[in-house]
Image 1 (tube, rainbow, N blue to C red):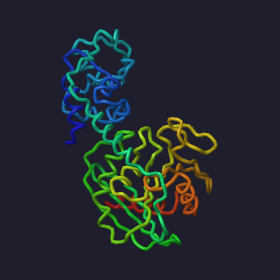
Image 2: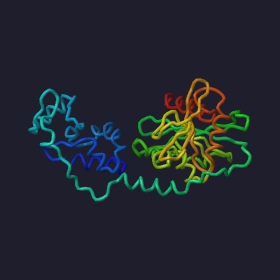
Image 3: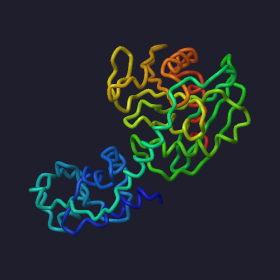
Image 4: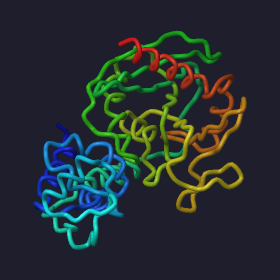
Length: 297
């Protein structure tokens, strides 16, 4: 069990009898409000009084949860806790908020990102994507030549313990990529990653994490923004241009540098290598293969 899940379990198990807490409060004690979605998806799997966790409005839509809370003396009328403040617990004994540790790692690694072109000739292009089945990650690499012809593909299975938490994806997907990258025979010149580069609230999306850790040029490609505003096809985060919005073939992607490449070169290569479908070719092929592999297992 990962330490983040262990910490969530400790928090839930420390909610007193007859009291409740909220997803938002738990996220604050974990150390980051981005973890709310993770808590909502995971709290019922915890071996403990999950029924004592409610939303900020005190609305109860689960009959079992309602019955268990009523047995503990919590007053509920019309699926809503009456006088939520009376039952609210917000006094957890936490010395160090665990997600702040990971956020600090992101901030330190982000200082090492180089947004300069450290690429000479591009002869071999890599693309990497992951898909999941339970706690198994399928890491798929494709290797293309400069004409975008597929010359090799690799598939690796890795057990993944880090939970899915928005803005912390680099720790979940990044480690399987780093563990398997050196198993690739070819020496690629650039790696396209299905994930954010610096288009991330703390500048360290998956592509940047992998690029810094492996010291290779990387480009991040996504279909959705994690943060920022689009102004004239530029993605602005904290008053900086972090990515570009690119439209082709009736599709939209967001392209951002990961490491050892400039914003301008990132945009240029993303457009150049986008020849069909939903993504630039290295990601398009890796995405197709990863989905097929997951469904075959």
